[in-house]
Amino acid sequence: MKKEIKKAAASFWKIRRQQQERQRDSGREDAGLRGAVTGGAQMDAFAHLVCNAIIESGIQNNCIYQKTALQLPGYYRPEKKWDLLVIYKGILGAAIELKSQVGPSFGNNFNNRTEEAIGSATDLWTAFRENRLGSIVRPFLGYVFLLEDCPRSNMPVDVVEPHFKVDPIFKGASYAQRYEIFCRRLVLERLYDASCFMTSTSDINNPEVHEPRSELSFKYFLDSLKGHMKSIQLLNFDNNSRL
Image (cartoon, rainbow, N blue to C red; front, top):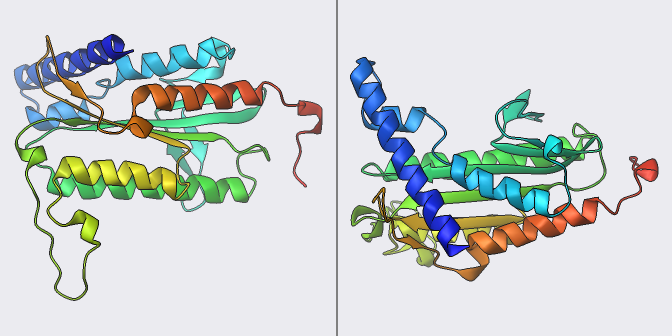
């Protein structure tokens, strides 16, 4: 698994560089760093590993949606497009986000990523409660995050406390540590069933990938996902209705 993760990280950096170069050569306004952000597809190699794990659990490939038909109904908005879905016999088996962040701007992007992940989960679970997702069976909600491992992402970050005290766990924490705390708490508060947090250096040939906590490792994430996929295959769908 470590070799597969390293290969996926190398693919991430290679695709990102190619997208930057294409955007720059085309002369488009979002060339450069923004072009690499808006180009998409960087996390495809990790998505491929997730799909393989789902298939290994017994779910057929035609139940997995990765490039198209990714919208799910929301509660606070009409729909939300996820990165990967599993629809098994008419029920939502899994909804997964695969996200990343690269420097140099970590501050605003950290806030955007956290707000996005929390909001998406809150919206989905409320829609689930309101019977917008068609089943009483709780889906697997997963979050995978890759952060660039660089001096700036590992520097301590000041907190601002003009009125009230910040949670002490954040004081002196780097952005890498903030993301680790964030991913842990997504699971602790049951917004997501499993979360994965990895850091990677930007070497396209031999990136160094670090997984700071075992419960946030990619293998643990995949094992949790496979367990859920196996469990939904045991359901009696004739009795799968709302109370």
